Image (cartoon, rainbow, N blue to C red; front, side, top):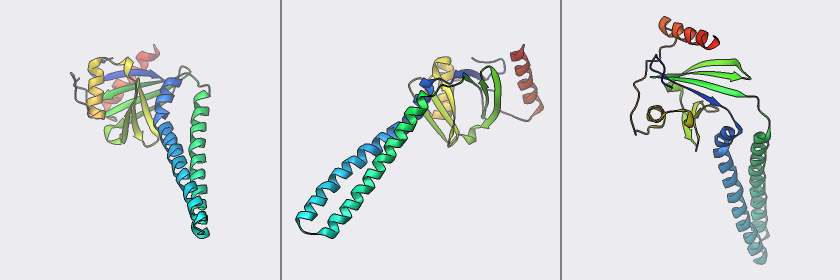
Length: 200
């Protein structure tokens, strides 16, 4: 929703579906790792037989060593895939993220089982990577920490604004956001007022 301060505020529940979309790149990487190493393993098996037939045991031994290395990579890919699958099956506490988008930064709150656990402010310059899934967008403020945004909770105009800023996709009408000035008296006062209103 667009707030009175002219910011975009959105709440996202972190569900199993969101986690699945967030882990999708890792799953694709593990699948490529497994498929690639198996394909190369087949090549090394063929070369082992060829060099053995040509009575070149040194080269056959080298190919066998490389074959074992490929099997190790396959096992690594399988382990990654298994750990991701196991992680998806874990039960999760109800976690809701609330984000407020300004011109130049984002305020984020993490709510676990109805209690605010963490509140942070991030400048746009901290964003190092973005990903977009079918339902969710992911804005990485560190290489391992992503803000999870439910696209279905945003209007077309709000979605266009966020995509223009963080995904460099310029389509549709955009909202002129209020400036991000954390630490200034007005900004802190507005944040405190918003928190009090939420508690009441």
